[in-house]
Length: 173
Image (cartoon, rainbow, N blue to C red; front, side, top):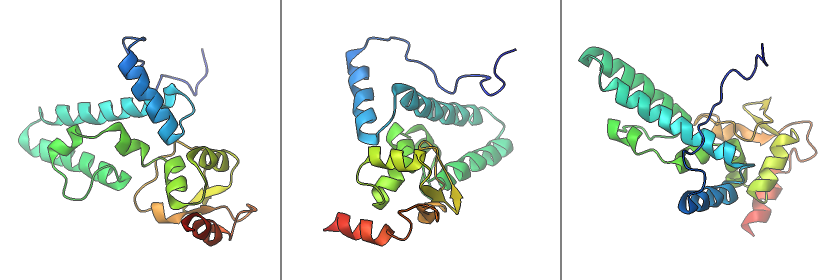
């Protein structure tokens, strides 16, 4: 029967395993965003491919349905913070891996100044010190919605709680 939680992969492997240029690009992203392994990078790259595929499929629909479906997809991407308000159809096709990786909780914790590095941010998240919207989140790959971005903070039970201002001020000095 198999494990019910693992019905299918959420990523596609590269078709050619040994391409120097691709491997160097993946390693650059792994270091810059503190990803654990290439599987995390492939997962987000596959997400972008799914958004693009969905957008191309929408173009084949009848005009009235096309407008509805495009609006739904655009609102989803705007809510995630991947696209800006007033984006066009072509903007969906121009989404880069950076756009999704910048919306990860791990990256936002680091950019907000709650951690000294992206690796430190990952450790804080995995150890249960970070909450989003009052809920503890222990997944560094959690995609944070645009409206939830301001509510990223330490969990009340964390020893770091209440020290956000000190950490941010310390980083600025």
